[in-house]
Image 1 (tube, rainbow, N blue to C red):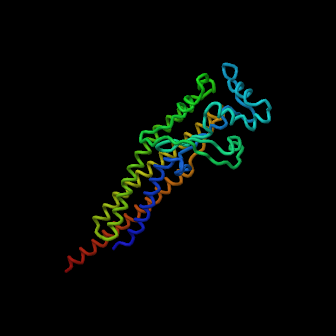
Image 2: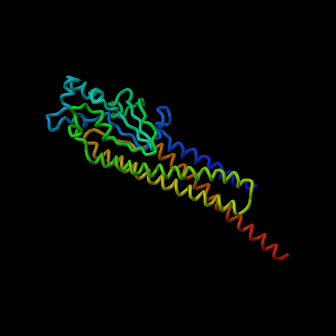
Image 3: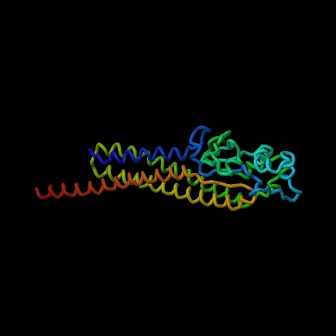
Length: 292
């Protein structure tokens, strides 16, 4: 028996579970909502510091909404964004996952979230899982706006659209890499079970190959996802700030994906050590046979 295969088995199993969680996080409202790639905060749309951005080419549609919603300036600053969000039919947040997105409202309200107070997310809807999914926030916001209000009215930056296109391209590539990683991590798991009961170099060599492919796929998936998340969040914060839109990266997702990669690295190192040890033992046995 090859007892070191137990470590390979445990690492492969944990990496497989984490990879599945990364791929299917957010598939339901109650399933791992904090495993998102990034979260787009729309609760402060039109809000800049202590004032609202009401300057558009038609005299300020937000100004009209504000006047209809509130008359007192203090109440306006504290509560008006929630009124505006409800009137525009836009959710407070949109969480982007690999195969779908979810949306909902901050509780008690978006103002508390913007002020750094403790808030909770009430997820109200998750789109169906789709292997070809891409998050199109521009389309979502446009469809949510009243007919008389366009993206131009709210000064929607083109750079935000560019950022969502980056997310689209990378999310598809990341998903493919995760699927490859999951398949070969599963094979690595089976190879570790088989390797526990055998000590031949052939099984060790096969395990190394499978583990390496799984490791490369997970490294690539994690690297692409990390670069895209960081770039997309930076772009959304930079260009969305002018209209009160912000984004936060999914730290839980990044933690899971790199943990899976690290575990697969350990499994690969153990498999390589098993192969090297097998070669040494094999050479020693052959040498002894030749002497006799």
